[in-house]
Length: 358
Image 1 (cartoon, rainbow, N blue to C red):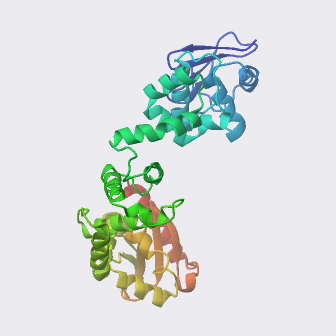
Image 2: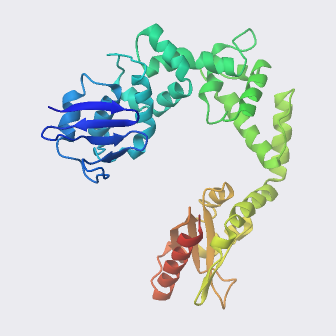
Image 3: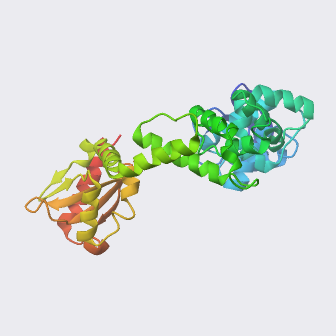
């Protein structure tokens, strides 16, 4: 009969017909065979061992069964699920007995991360509430913990709803400095402009303001937000072309060595201004300006122009390089290259990128 044993970070799985166990290192997600070598395929008897013990076993075993059934993960490699394995093993160490949670919560990244970041609070909460529910823990405790962290609590100047709006818009308020500034301006009434059920007006204006300040390399201003916002926005718009060119140049030149390449009669030209993107788009009749210029400015991708050495000022091939991989390599009107010399250049520059990008 199948059985499980646990020693530190090793889960030993005894399957029917085998005297020695398979071993799973939960800190690495690696499954070792009976002879001690990592396995590449699911060992015989492993799926039935987990399925037969899932209902009345530890949270760790339940988790492995869930990600096998729901996500198709083989009982041979759990490496991409290590953080979840470690977390639920920690929960099991609390001797939580038969306490369980909804299966979908076990792999919810936000809930697992929050509980893991505040594990002492979560352990205490489990004892008090007699449940493992990550969703309930988050809903009950996240707001209180967040308020204590930033030393702010609802009062006549800032409501629970406004504080929750700041907390929940983590993609906008993603640094301590931004959060404190949002709280400061909220206490001065900024979030009172808008509907009570939506604070999008304030969130959007603050997000824009943060971007303007970043581009202008200026600190956030205290006092009247409307004055600070309009003044900063005007400065940004007045200098936008200059600022965009600087960010564009910085992001392109960050990979100057990798993007500089020559082979045969072709070579790359690294565009460093918005005007060069405009000229390329006009000559090639493509969307390199309208679709990709902002992405290059933001540092999300890179673009080079491939030119013939005897005509370096004449557009020929527009090439996008994202994370060291050629994503697009197109002639005028977005036509694919057909000449063997062009195909060879693409192969050679990709080989070069592979060797140098990191």
